[in-house]
Image 1: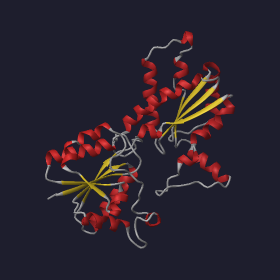
Image 2: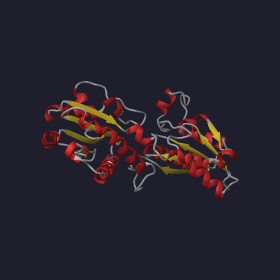
Image 3: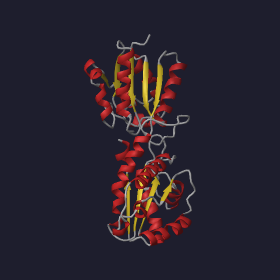
Image 4: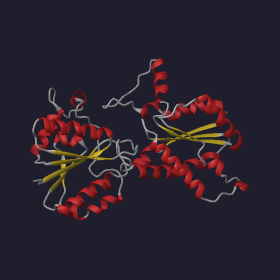
Length: 327
C-alpha cells in the first residue's frame, strides 16, 4: 500500500519540468488523494540531506499553475550518487559513507514508498543505481523514472519531454539572431545549440526555423531576402565535418548572399577541439559525471575561428540559445 511518494527533478533544465511536477501532483490528487506527496529540493542533493517541501492541499488545488512556468519549482542539481569523492568534497555525505545507502536510509526516514525522478540520462542512470541498491538490500521501495531531456537522446524513448518545446524556443531565438546578418557586410553567424553527443535538438531547431522562413513573405527587391535569413549549414556530433570542404561550399554562399548562418551542436567536432587543447598542454575541465565542460571550451568560437579566414568574414557573431531554450 502506497501512502507517501516523493518527487525530485535533476540534471539540466528542460521546458517540461515544472509541468511534469504539476502533472504528477494533479494525477495523484485525482486517483489517490490520500497519498502524501513531498518534493526533494534540488534533486538528489535534497534527497541526501533530507531537504524537502510538503505538497499541501493548497498546492494540490493550484497545481495547474505549474504548467505555465519554466524551470523547476523544486530546483535541480548535478549529483551522482556513485561519485562518493565528489559528494564528500561538496559536503553532501561524510567520508566513508556510501551515498546510495545515505539516500536509501533517507527515503526510509522520510517514510517514502515511491520516488519519482524527473530527469535525463544521468538522472535516470542514477535512479537505476539507486533502484538496484534498494532491491539488493531489500528496502522495499520503488523508483520510477520520468525521462526528460532537450537532447531527445533517451533510448528507447522516441520523444522525450521538453525536447520539442526547446526546439521551438531555439527557432524563436534564431529569428532575432539571424536579423544581425546585415548589421555589416560578410557576417558569419553561428547559432550554438545544446547537444553534447546528440544533434537532434540542433537539427529540429534548424528545421523549425527553416519552416518559418518558408512560411513568411519576403521582399528581396529591398534586401529582405529569404536566402540571407535561411540556414546555410547544420553541424551535429554524429557527422564528420570536413572544415575545408565546408568552407569552400560556404565561401560561395558568403560571396553570393553576403552572410553565412550556421546552426551548430555544442558537441560537434568536440574530439578535434579537445585534441588541439591537449596538444597545447591545456587542461580540459570535466564535471562530476566525467563530461567535458563545454561552456569552458566554447565550440562556437572555435568553429568561428576556423571558418572566419577561409570565408573572408569581416565579422563573426556566436550566440548560444541553450539557457533560453531549455528553461
